[in-house]
View 1 (cartoon, rainbow, N blue to C red):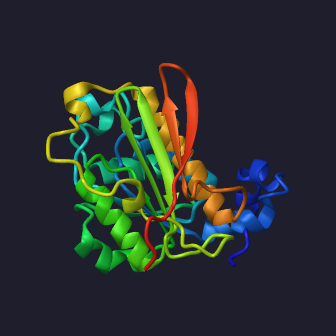
View 2 (cartoon, rainbow, N blue to C red):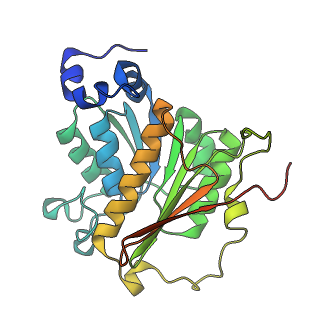
Length: 252
């Protein structure tokens, strides 16, 4: 792996001081290539913390532009970037935070065709999208490419996240669960309203997006116990976290 420069050693000193991370873990972060779907509510804190952590290459998939109603929660953007592409705005913010990070922009939608063209160039996929079509497409693509998927969702005052590695087996020899073991089918169109209809507390996206970044860092460095086979639930109004375990329903 590429050695850390003196500037990087100083920048990441608090990471390097952690025995669980150290210089070797920081080098893994530097070498990592992470693809993030969405530069909005969840993507904003996620991208900021991945850049701050020193993830070497960060891809962003988003075809939207920054609007005024985004700024209550999408904190990687600001008033000065209204009307700009979200990937452009996010890349500029990440560069100001950490010039050692390389941002790759994709101004398009994530789907199976996109994944077939680009996902092989990344080590890990993170889904911060706001629709079920993209979530299922991300889960299928990550399983096919055999890359870990960190996926999260938010609504009103509640959020959730999990980690998927369905191509690997656990300690008991059983394959880890798929996304469809947790959510077997997409809900009917219009059954679950979008945040534009119901509202969302801005800080909630910061909580879940930051937790997603934590899972990405754990996966890259190999520390801790990622949320594989576990769904983490957060209720912002009661300040309560719960964890639900789930398993693979069928082997294949």
